Length: 375
Image 1 (cartoon, rainbow, N blue to C red):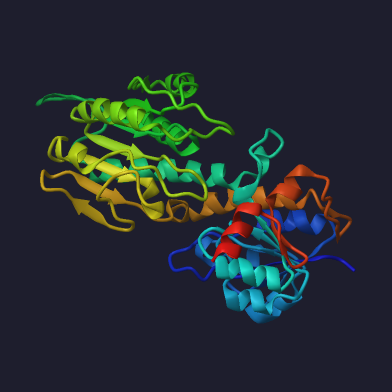
Image 2 (image 1 turned 180 degrees about the vertical axis):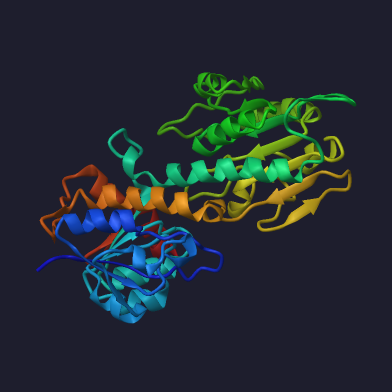
């Protein structure tokens, strides 16, 4: 019997992305699987039901009950997990560290859950990397927000009233989001600098035409992430960064570590030293924030007139392209196991084994398992 792949409407307020686009649905069908989606699954991302060719449309409960594989953007709710049949497969961004009850429910229902944020960061996994694809959207959007909020032009302009100097923009963090932010700020004509504690990012920042802001601190870590700074290194970084921030008109902070609280980089004292009218866009506001005083979903104006913009779910603000990239990521992962309409999981495959959160009534991800047992 052919595997049934399902997607339903996202229920988290403000979530406009969809895990299954018409393009990817066609690819899955070509591999022999059946597809059932809830009515209006892709509507918020501007993919109407009519765009899904040869796909069955059902109500949510029916779609979930029939799912052999559920593709999702946000983690399924406890109610949705209860409606899935035992042994079903869930693939998506599952945030296991944020909701232990959900992980327990997946375990108890014997759901095989793949949390895409656990995907090993290897060359082979790049086409499946949802963190990178969605971070690119976030970096792009963050700069547009900064440009909109700034009281200055970003580019240099020559006018009858004289020459307008370009804004100075600093991007903190040179991961995928940071590099996309740098590229976008450069396209808008700003004078851009990038900062990251990983020295290997210097070449990447400069390749985009930006200047690398060297604060004299190196925190090269493993797996492409920065290690935690020592107290002395942090103090040195803070002093140097505080002085540099005084000259910038806009700052975009992108530093984040999946599954952990965002590192605090800019203190309230640093904000107090910045020029009036400066803008800081904190992409990491949802996970604690890189900036002291920023709040997710709000703009806070400091006593000296600096706007702290705490963003939430930026990828959802560009739902068409964000959905297209995300759905392709999930398809590339699903393709590892889907052959001639049948789903066969190869547990010897590192990508499958290490991305697995729960399987056969067990929590397979040891850090999450430890959190659940400790709770």
